[in-house]
Structure formats: structure tokens, C-alpha cells
Image (tube, rainbow, N blue to C red; front, side, top):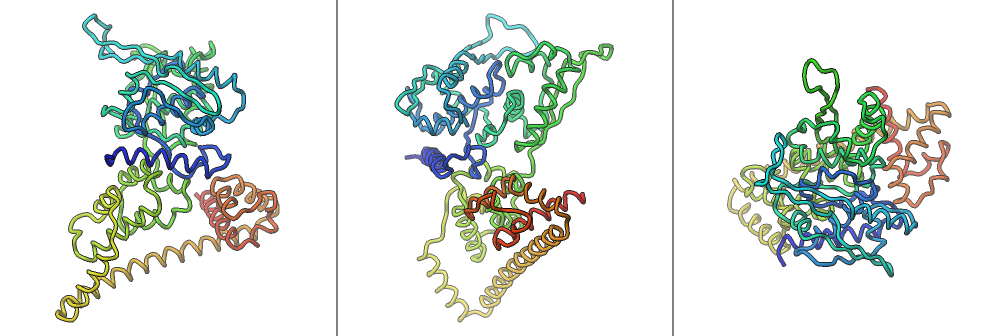
Length: 459
């Protein structure tokens, strides 16, 4: 089995593992990353509703995990519905969602956008989804061969995170998010005809034809939801065709990816110390954190820690001569680890060298100083976090009853709060402003939450 096929199989297995572990929790609340490399050709699809887009996402995710195309894909129906965040038991509605996905066509052409097509141009129209069968708790589906080539082929692509897309509740927000993803590195999209963009989510109300109605009813709510729920910060600018015209008919989006560490921490709060080490000790860049985020489902905490230990080990040997961050990323990608035999061998060599050379002894002392410096920085960071928690507790204890109740409510409703309650096996209804600080483990994280709210208010 090739390394790539092994990675895909692992991704599929880990998504199944998360499905079983979450026990009824929607995919949008997963702290692991579930996604695939999606071809850029799929970003501008017209007339596809939110549920149907999720259906296509789930089906293409299944196909993307296979090393070779299959004629029929067959998976557990409950797992498939979890991937597409379909929580209804209405079978008739699910059938209508599938039929909508089957009706939508995608067009691929090499005709430049600034001229009409000619007979010499290539143009292909194809269904996104072929036949689908549901029965006995399974779903079987066919994907047209042309679509399969685009799913698994080497063409330009981008990472699609199902945990993010499943959180959208607005079809237009999802359609815009799909379109802008390939432009993340550029920072802005091309100018888009508003009439073209209005067709993305399907039929809109008649008032959408006027920008003064289209903007507050459809465009602005969609942009707000993208900024709230996704990994992107999005804004837009508009213009008319000419300086003499007052009719707005074109739009361009500006975007940037949110701070990757902050985004990962919001979804994976348990990995705080690990990500802190990567950022502070090894100085990983945002681009390198983006790579980790894309592979987060297979690059587990254990694997990252293993790569950290391997890089530290090679640093101590003097074999990392350029970029520790780049070396760590390579160790993470290739899953390198230090064997016990190698640890023992190096230990013996170090002892012999220390006995024979004062220079080796000094080098060993310098290595110890580096470790102590790192440990001191880690301790300073822990001390600072404890001080922040204490300030959060003091603020909560000194607040009025109304403020305390609101802080407890906000924490219980937050993703971090929900995760902590599940870990500690506590019921949200049993917590109040009078007893939340009596839970030793919970009170620490609650103090951190209150401090963060206090800091936001100050800003």
C-alpha cells in the first residue's frame, strides 16, 4: 500500500471513529478535522440547496478516501447522514434532497469569460451525482466518471473542512464560502457579476434583483455567518460597470484566513499546551499551522508530540542545522520517531564522550541550559495563565447576581464549556453561579473563560 493510500484509509477510519465516539453530537461540534482536498472546479455550482450541498460533500468525501475510483460506493446510512449533518428522520425529505443533488449539473469549459463560446471550445455538462440507493441501513451511490476524475485528480484544489461547512445554516453563506476558498492565498476574488452570484443558492425572491434589497436580506447575513462560523475573515466591495452608471452590478470579496492557532484552539481546546509548544518553542509559521490543521484528523496529539520529541532529540545531537520548524514538519509528515535502541546508543556515546572530552561536557551543559530555559518559559506561561484564571474568579465573585448568572449561562453554551462538561460528566442544569466554583477542575477553565470575556470587554 502506498503512503497516500494509507493516509486516505486512516482518514476514513478516524472519521468513523469520531462518529462512534461523539454519540449523537453533530459533526459541526467535532474537535477533530474531517475533510478532503476538493477540486476548484466545484466552487461555483448553481441552484444547489444547503442540504444537497452537504449530501455532495459527504459522497465526495467518501470517494476521496479511496485510492482508486469505484463503480459503487456503499457505506452505513447513519454514518453518511452524520457526515452531511442530516439529523431528520424524514425519509421522504432525504429522498428529495438526493434528487435535487442529482438534478444539478456542472459545466466545465475552456471558453474565456470575456467572449462567447465557439465551436472550437471545449464544453462539458455533467451531473454531480449518479444513481443512489437506500435500504437496510445502507446507502449506495454512483459518481459519474468525469466527477471522479476531478475528485481524485491532480488539478488545482483546496481543503474542504466538513466540520466547518456543516455549521452553516444559510445556503447563500455556504455558496459564497465554496466560491472564495480557492482565493485564500491571493486574498481577494475576481470581480463577479451580481446576477451570476444570485443564481448560486437557487431561486431568490423578486426583491433580490435590486441591490438595496439584496444586500441586507441575503448578502450581509451570509457574510456575517461566514465570519462567525468559518476559518475565514470576509469582506466585500462593489462597483458599477461605468463611472456614469449608478447601478451596482459587480462584487469582489476580500478574505484572509483567521489566525490558525486561535482557530484550532477554538475547536481543540485540549491541545492548548501542545500548540503553545509548537508556536513558542519551534516558531511554526501560520502556513505550517495551516498544514497541521488540514491533516489534524490523522496528525493526532500523540503523533505531534512524537515529532516534537524526535526533533528535540536531533537538535540535541546537533543534526538540525537549518530550520527546527521545517525539520519538525518533516518529522510529522513522515511519522519519524526515536527508537529505544537509538536512545540507549546515544546515551552510551554521550557518556563516553563526556569522560574523554571537556568540550563534550560543556556541550552537554549547554544542552541542559536550553532545556531549562524552555522549561522556565513554559513555567512562566503556566504562571501567567494561573494569574489570569485568578483574575477571572475574582471578577466573577465580585460581580452582581445578574452578571454571574449570565457568565455561567454563556460558559455552558460555549463550545469549550460543552466539551469540559462532557469530559467531567457534569450536567449543565446542575451548575449555577452559586456552585460552579466548587468544582475544582471546572472552576479553573471557567475562570479562564471569564478572564477572556473581561479582556474582550476591556478591548
